[in-house]
Structures are given as structure tokens and as C-alpha cells.
Length: 230
Image 1 (cartoon, rainbow, N blue to C red):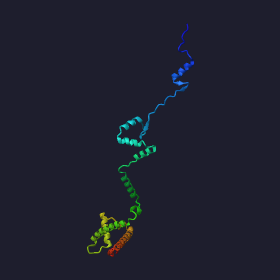
Image 2 (image 1 turned 90 degrees about the horizontal axis):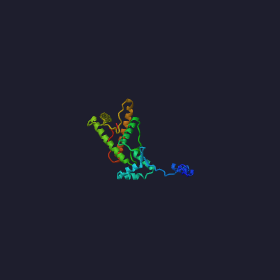
Image 3 (image 1 turned 90 degrees about the vertical axis):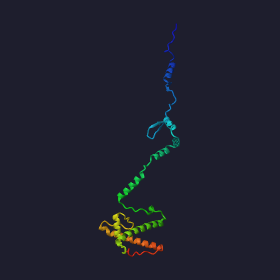
Image 4 (image 1 turned 135 degrees about the horizontal axis):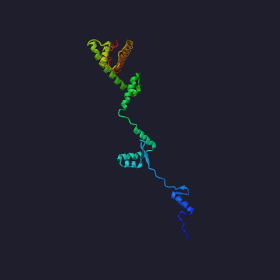
């Protein structure tokens, strides 16, 4: 009587094929399966990766204004997005301008350098008549106050002489009310007194001459400046 062949005995080719099938290979080659889908992640500005599913949850819970903003930002390319982020980060504090102005003023005072600004930086072109009107008004107001203070030293009937003006100017300097519109501060040393007097005299004579020209152009009678020129 013939015995049934055991399961271990069989065709060697079938066994090899079965072995390959069990191991998931076919003729020594790996089976090509579908590639696994990677979870879409977005990079947060802080550097951390954010899952797209979490992002969708955040977008669904956002306010209508936020959804409109997210839709608007989704149209940006990389360059536009980086520029928008840089713009959002470049913010100034509320006191940035005041601190900047204060720093510039402090540096200017520390330098101690006298700067002569360009005239075009101080006034508009073609506005000479308005500037002359403002300066002449200020000059007359200053002259009236200086003459009033000088009269207190000269008396009622006596002519106001330049020395009375100097006394009045010194008095105003001591009180802190002198603005030095035309006249210069008194020199603190004897070496600069002569220069100060020359500057004072030249400015005074120039102011008198300008006043005379102004009155001649306007048809008014020039004032008697003989006493002031002494």
C-alpha cells in the first residue's frame, strides 16, 4: 500500500514561490506598494511645525474677519509673505519719535558746534514779504519793550541814550526776560568786551537804517535817530 506524500515533500519551485509570497517578495524583488501619505505640516513663525488638521480646526473656529484675512494671506507667495511678516514686526513704540528727537537735541548740545542752517530749510521760496513782515513785527515789539525799560533809567524828560539801553538790557538779563533779538549778551571777560561792543554797535546801526528805509518806502516820516546813533 502506497503512503501519501508528506506536506514537506513537494515541488521545489512551488515551495520557493510560496516562500517568496510569505515573505512578501517576488523573485527577490520587493513588492511595490502605495507610498504612505505624509501629514501636511506647516511651519509656525516660532519655528515649530503645525499639523494641517490642527490648522483647519483653528480656521473653522476663527472669526469672519480672521477667515477673510487667512484667505487673503493664502494668495501670497513666499516673497510677499516674508515682506508682510517683516512689515508686521517693524513696529515702533508710542514714545519712539520723542526719544529720537530728545537724543538728537542732546547730541547737538554736547557737540557745542554752531550750525548755520540753510535758508531754504527754514522758509519757503518766494515768501520774503511774509518773512519781512514777521521779523519787523517782532523787532518793533522788542524795541518797544527795551525802550520802556530804558525810560525807567533815563527819566521822563531826558533823552534815551545807548548807555540806558545797555542798563536796561543788563537788567533784563538778570531777570531772565532778555531774548537778545538784536543785541548780544554782555561779554563775561574783558578780552571779549570790545568785540561785543562792536557787534552791538553794528547791529544797532543796521536796525536803525532798515527802519529808516522801511519808513521811506511806506511814505511815513522817518523817526529822529540822532540820539540813538550817539
